[in-house]
Image 1 (tube, rainbow, N blue to C red):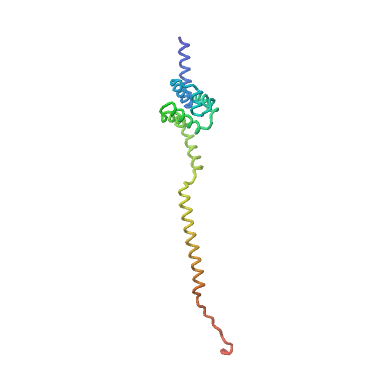
Image 2 (cartoon, one colour):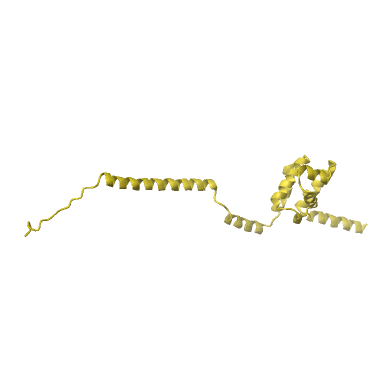
Length: 165
C-alpha cells in the first residue's frame, strides 16, 4: 500500500512538471478521441501533417515549428473540435507567467533595443522634412528669379583723373 501511495505521489509530481504544451496536447487528444476522430481524419481535414499532430498531442516541442505556428495549429484544431480557444491559448501562454522576474527584466531590456520605429511616425517625419525642403528651395529660386527680373541698381562712380589733378 505504501508503494502505491509513493507511485501516486510521483505521478502527481510528474503531472505538475508537465509543460503547458503537454497539457494542451493531452487536452486536444482527449477532445479528438471524445469526438471519435482519428489522427488521419483530423490531419486530412486541417491539412496538417500527422507527425505534427502526434508531436503536438505528446507535447514534443522539438518536433514542432516555432511557437507562433504551434499557436496557430492549436487554434485551428480547437476550432475544428469546437473547443474554447481562449482557454487553450491562455494555457499555452501560461509558461510566460511562470518566468522568474530576472528573466522578465532581461527580456524587457532586450525588447527596448529591438523596438522598431512606428511606420506612421516615419511617414509624418518624412513628409515634414519634404515640406520644409520644398519651401526652402522655393524661397531660394524665388530670390534668384527676383535678382534677374529686378536687378539692384549698382552705382559705379567713374572718376576722371583730370578732375582731381
